[in-house]
Length: 256
Ligand SMILES: NC(=O)c1ccc[n+]([C@@H]2O[C@H](COP(=O)([O-])OP(=O)(O)OC[C@H]3O[C@@H](n4cnc5c(N)ncnc54)[C@H](OP(=O)(O)O)[C@@H]3O)[C@@H](O)[C@H]2O)c1
Image (tube, helix red, strand yellow):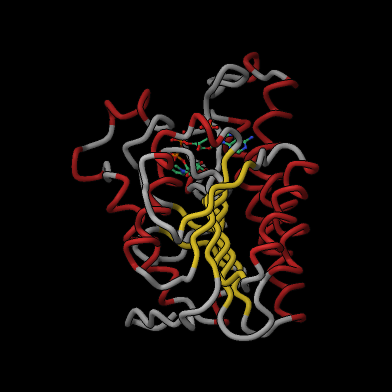
């Protein structure tokens, strides 16, 4: 990874943010539009009508497309709409993730394990981003810089797991990391310029972290716009040799 941001996307093409309705995803959409480096920014989310953060943006470069990452048919339908835009996809950001919702909540002990919750968390956090790669790979730019990044989490590191708990979330992010690493090897053979990475955003002030923020010192809780700026700077500095890696918001490597 070079030290200086290269801003090396060629200036044509599109960036796609999957999981863009709120939180870090909608922050990425705004940051990418502000950065002005892509002809088009495609924001996908499962329910565009309810995506207030996206609906508040008035910018002709923004396309909002429905996509439920837990549903392969929905991913395919979204890919057809992206194909119709006829732009090379240069940046694909998989952001959607679930830690707690109506189906799942972070487990403290083995007795809390629930098969339905495990399936659900894996579907959104690991299987979905892998299916995104499967379905969107043919739309990735064939020449020039291409980055596929997915938001993982440091707690998905097996080597760094000292606290335990959060079984489904930890395991789904570890599975995501392995799926990305494997895809990085395959994509590298097909396109030498393609970079695939797992990124840890740092604890960020969103609905996902809200119930756990009390233990986080103020300076370690990032506002969404800071997280997005930091991660886009990390992406800018990546080169082909970094593909298949797991990086934190400051560019440092994270143990698998
Ligand atoms: N915030 C943190 O401190 C933190 C730390 C480490 C890693 N991360 C990772 O960063 C990513 C973004 O997290 P966040 O903090 O922005 O979370 P968030 O505010 O809770 O937002 C989660 C996003 O995921 C979307 N989503 C959930 N299920 C989906 C599905 N089936 N299809 C499409 N979209 C779906 C949600 O869409 P709806 O509006 O439709 O529900 C929402 O846009 C996640 O992968 C998370 O694991 C976050």
